[in-house]
Image 1 (cartoon, each protein chain N blue to C red):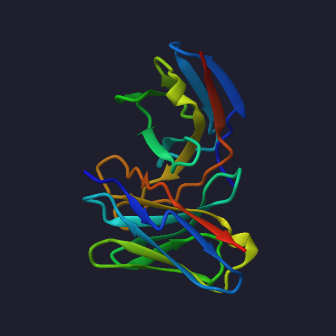
Image 2: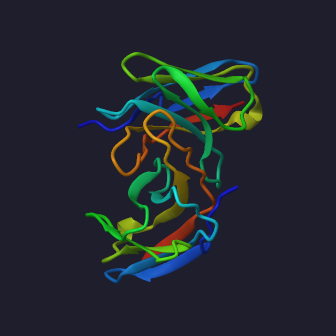
Length: 114
Length: 114
């Protein structure tokens, strides 16, 4: 049973460019959340998708947008890249079960901005 | 801001139990306690969660005090592969369409030594 898969694993972009990151959730999961993790810091919540709608959003500018597809997979788009967007981008999937909804993470996409 | 307080770092001898404490004195009645760990260059790994009863799974045990203001994660027989950053997180559970985001603090860096 495959877990959460993310692509690509590494990416190098320059300032001002746009990037799309992809996530396939764990089988049976219907909710996808995205996190940004800067070096030496804990992950920070970007947004969450359920039933193809953005349900919650963290403190990130509109340059960060996302999408969820009918098969529950998801994309994270970042426009007008800044040097400060260099980070590990993590996708987590989950499904509601009686007694909680543990999120399961992929190993992330390492984005470097030059 | 994270709603939990954890020691910055801890050491444990290989083969011994590792007991990782967490304070969450402002926890509310509908908030669960979640534990994750992150091994270098990997995504966070879900360990265990609970509401008010003690919980055990194949990875660890979670002990929650009766007033729910603190908890302890127990790794019964620590190995070198358990060296990681451990995050204690409290999160409200709304249901399938609106699950709470995870707010990560700095976590506890556990070093398991031979």
